[in-house]
Length: 162
Image (cartoon, rainbow, N blue to C red; front, side, top):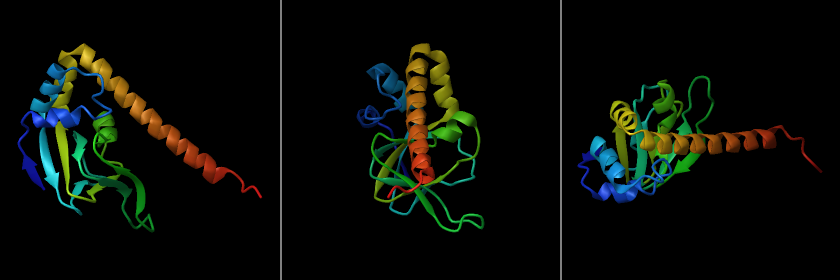
């Protein structure tokens, strides 16, 4: 992993993110100044399940995989979802202050923007409008994921038709 300097160009990529949708350029610039970008090679671990995480990550370019690693209790690795530009990761632990619920690995050369929770919270506390937009976007993202999980559970629970 190599940390890159955040220099204006990151804003254009952050604007693709569902988390920051609806924010104006001034607010996007403030978010960019509060974080940094990092480059990952294929196979680099970005987040590790069970480890503390106090950052929100937004994929700027490349592809990553969210997965549950093989453990003593889990007989195999479980792929949860691929993520790409505009997607965020680490939002669960970012919101609830608990260790990461899954691992994330780069599957291609990737660049990820990382903003510390303390810096992000400072921005949200100082700008109620930005906070409202971002929290609504996060809520919509989390609800979408929950609905997808519910649909999968319904498929698994449905008796086979034949």
